[in-house]
Image 1 (cartoon, helix red, strand yellow):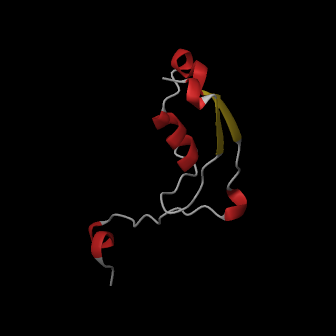
Image 2 (spheres, helix red, strand yellow):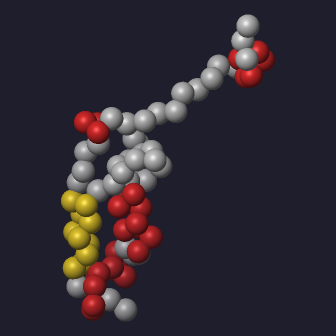
Length: 76
């Protein structure tokens, strides 16, 4: 006997969880002095760190990249 959604003819969808071997980490160097010209905000840095820009993003895993921010004191 089927339960829940399967009773109504819908298939259950399994949650995707990337394997550690599938996660590729990249390095991003951001010059904060030029960040206004390139419009790189702290929100974009956080997005890179969490890995939300990747297709294999999973909120329960660390899929993010490495980010280095230079000239942070010169940005205002």
